[in-house]
Image (tube, rainbow, N blue to C red; front, side, top):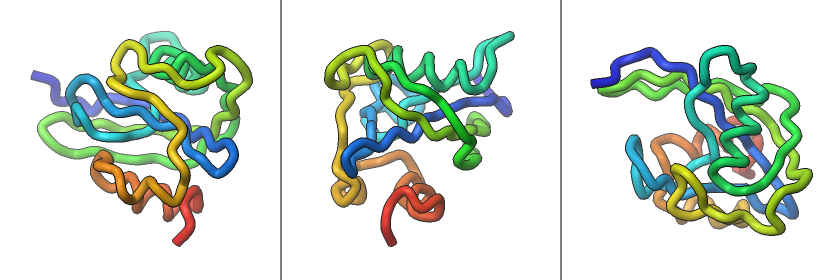
Length: 133
């Protein structure tokens, strides 16, 4: 049984007013839409981990830049997730689900609130000014 706290990373990649999102294929939050991301590995920088997770889950290569914000998920397992800004720079022409993702795609910003997302995702992205109010 995991408990934590565990350090995770995520990546906010916006292109043409659409956000790169994945539908989680495994627990936690299996079946819910979220940002590509996952757990930091020993000896890995936060930015490298964010880029690796995007590539593993979507097939897209990203250039990771600034820290956008920190998200904390409390429950049976405690995660502290650092979300970075990313820019798609290569890899697959379009997102393709891989590893932990059941689906990966560009979601128009105005449609995100209609998806079944991980808890507080829409509110957090709005607070971080990724989504309009």
